[in-house]
Image (cartoon, rainbow, N blue to C red):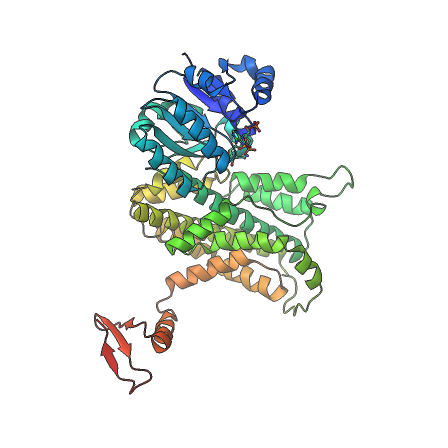
Length: 476
Ligand code: NBP
C-alpha cells in the first residue's frame, strides 16, 4: 500500500481535489462508483502526479497507507451514507473517513457518533471554492476528532488556499462543526449575493445605468473596502455580452434564482437556535420570490405609488449605495458569526470565530479584504459580543449610516425592493435601540396567556390579573 490519501467520488469536485493532492506530491488512490469517471480523470490528467487506479472498494482501501485516509466527494444525503457503509466495512480501527460534500451538520453528528462507536474517525469537512477552488486551493473546514487532525491536517493544509503564508484550513471543532460553519459560510454567501443584487438593482432602476456602466461601478468598488471575489466576478459578469443577441448577458438571463439548499438550512438552524439572521433569511426569501413566476407575472403593473424622482446626483447616490452595501454586509456577517457562536454553545463545540475569519480570507466564495478586518476584530477581542461593536466596524457604520438611510428611503420611495439593505438597517436600529416595543409584546402575552413578565425595577416574574381586578401578583 502506497497511497497517502484516497478520493472516492470523482465528479467535478472530487476529480479536482484529487488532482490538487497529486500536484502537491501526494500519492492519490482513485475510486468512483462507475469506473468511467476514474478512467476519464486518468486519461486527461494522469500525468499530473502519482495516482493509483482502483475499481472496487476493497482494492481502494487496500491501496492506502495506515492510518488510511479517504475523502468522500459524492452527492450529499443517501449516497454519502451508502459510501460510508461500504468503506467502514473494509476499514480498520484508527482509519479516517472524511466527508467533503455539503452534508447537513446533523447528519455529520450522527455519522461521527456511529463511526466512533466502530473505532473509526469521521471528519465532516466543509470545502468551499467551487470547482476552481478544489483544483487550485479551496478553503477547508474540517470538524471531527482533534487526534485525526494531527494525521490529516498537514495533508489538507497543503492543498488549501494560502493567505500571507497561512493555509485556509484549520481544525474547526468536534463532530458536525465543520459542516455547520460551511453551511453558515454559504448562508453569508447568499446574503452577500443578495446585497450585491440590490445594489445592482438600484444602479439600474434608480439611476438608469446600463450593464456596462454598472460593471465600471463594481470595478471601482473592488479597489476599495468592498474588494472581494463576489464583487470582482460581478463586474466580469456585467461586462459579458451575449453572442446571440449582442446584449449584455445579464439582460437575457431569466430572473428566477435557484438554490440548492444550504441557505435554507442556515435559516432553519438559526430559527432553532433563536438567532436573527435577517440578512441571510431575506436572501433566501428573495430567491424564492424571484422564482414565483406565476404570481409575479400576474402582479406586474400593480400600483406602485412612486413618491420620489430619480436621485439628482448620480455620483453621490452611487457613493451612498457603496456605503449601504458595506454597512449591510457588516450586519450580515455579524449575524452569521452570532449563529456560529450560538451553535458553539448549544453543541459544546468551543469554536473560535477568529479562526473562521482567517480561513475564509482565501479559497472560498466569500473571500474578501473585509475578512482581514473581521480577523483583526477577533484578534483584538475574542469575546466580542457582536462584530458591530468592534471599534473599526462601529466607525465604518458611523461613516455609512446616513448613506444607508438615504438608500433605503429612496428605494422605498421609488418602489425598488431592497429587502436585505432594509432588514439589515432595521436589525442595526433594533440592536442599538434603548427600548424596544417588546415590553408591549410581553404585556400582551401576559394578558391573553398569563405568560408572565419581568420588571425593570425589581427581580422576579410577575403576572397582572387582567380578567380580575388588574392587580399585579408575583409569579415566582
Ligand atoms: P455530485 O454532487 O454531482 O455527485 C456525483 C458523484 O456522486 C459521482 O461520483 C457519483 O458516482 C457519485 N454517487 C452518486 Br450521485 N450516488 C452514489 C452512490 N449511491 N454511491 C456511490 N457514489 C455515488 O458531484 P460534485 O458536484 O462534484 O459534488 C460533490 C460533493 O461536493 C457534493 O456533496 C457537493 O454538494 C459538494 N460540493 C460541491 C461544490 C460545487 O461547487 N459543485 C462545492 C462544494 C461542495 P457516479 O459517477 O458513479 O454516478
